[in-house]
Image (cartoon, rainbow, N blue to C red; front, side, top):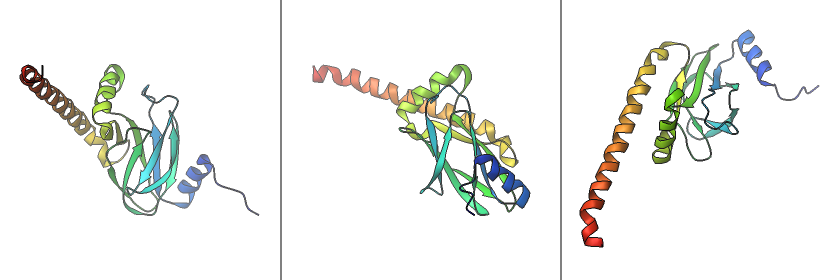
Length: 164
């Protein structure tokens, strides 16, 4: 008798009781994309499903090293490489780079560099200590955007007499 596809809670219960491996991805409530979902891409070419705003979903994977990223209609995240061991459920969260009062900065960077709008973070395991790396990478992106803007503005000022 066919029982149909497993719902998310059944997948998580099955994974914890039988030792299946996979990734649990939570979409943080960060006030961006409230009415949309993100697509989960594994190993750069396998679109495995979606996660709604504020929800959590489990994706079963074979043990090994996998590359994960998330995509929206116009923006995405850089790939995150995770190692999934047999019987392990890796906890990840997907959110915009800056949350709270700096959410507007993420929108600005998202328009200029849409491939860095979202970020995937581990919420358990050895990669949790690397959260400060995302902050410094984000600051580097902002500095790059500001310097590029200054360069373009300088070129416009220098070339304005020639154009007009």
